[in-house]
Image (cartoon, rainbow, N blue to C red; front, side):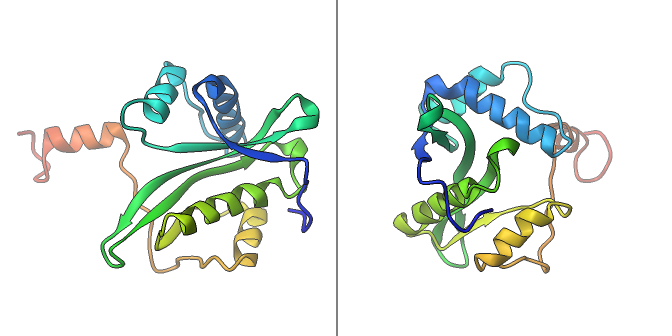
Length: 175
């Protein structure tokens, strides 16, 4: 990422009308990470979980006004809470910039925006995960003073795993 961000970039909160653009960006991130992107009723889920009665996340878009306000990157954040700090936190789920717009400081602008939101909201921490092979991102994170958490391991249960656990139970035998 560049030391001098592109000053023509604007950051704004996504609106329901942005669903297609955001899903396109998420699919571009999935391709970059060699993963499957959202499928099925992704558009409806984006609207429900992002703009329904109880939003689960916030999405902020980076746009280039000189290109008809094309969304060229995004960041998704959501609220967390630390019992040790007894303060709210933010989790940064995604920060992504389209490949042809990288090295212009756009990722840094998005990351800085998330940091500003965390500070404004009195959050005790901002946390995120990074793939072990994404050395460029790791260099940026190290460069801004983020601390790599070597003593914590990331665990995940997929929906299938959770359902299987609940049906089989902790004993390993069907209930």
